[in-house]
Amino acid sequence: MKRKLLIALFFLLSACSSHQVSTSEQTLYERVQTAIRTHETKYLSDSEYEKIAIYMSEGKSRWIALYPEFQDRPFISMTSFQEGLNISMAYALSENPEETLKFIDKNNVGEICGVPFIEPTEAEIDSYYLKTRAALMAQGLQGQWREKCLSVLNTTMRKSRLTD
View 1 (cartoon, rainbow, N blue to C red):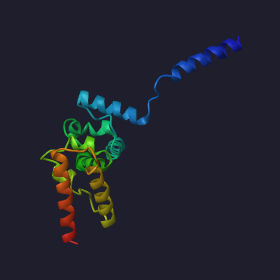
View 2 (view 1 turned 60 degrees about the vertical axis):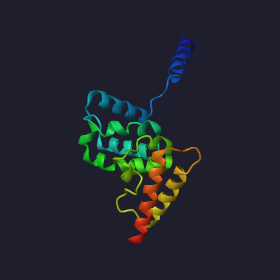
View 3 (view 1 turned 120 degrees about the vertical axis):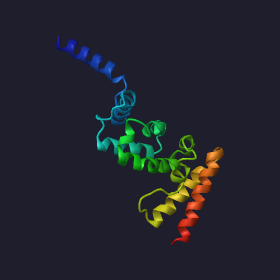
View 4 (view 1 turned 180 degrees about the horizontal axis):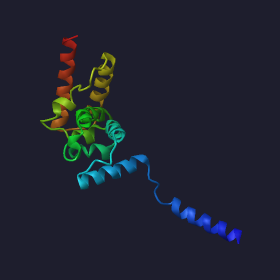
């Protein structure tokens, strides 16, 4: 009897393990999708907003793709999140330029493609510039916003060197 119970339990657990285990990132993504559908963010904590910004900054495509949603209800009321949104996209630019460039337009090109960071060190600016410029120069990337972004990035760096 014990043996049959153990075998049944083994098969039950095996069947369950074949289903995708939900990660904390996936759980957060699902919560964000619910917030978008219901126009309600009361179930998202400040730390979850920080995680969203980190995922975007890391260049994760599905989070970058939510950029337009994050600029609208219900997220618009989260001031600190809104203030950091273009900063997250600027970091994403060097990690995943192809996806990030899809969301650059005349209203945000100066902020995302510039150096929109709060009190960065000179070393941080230089590192960001080199990494982002290399990402934008990558073979295969083309288009109007790539060129405009490179122009803004280069101009921003020249201006920062003149004020030093």
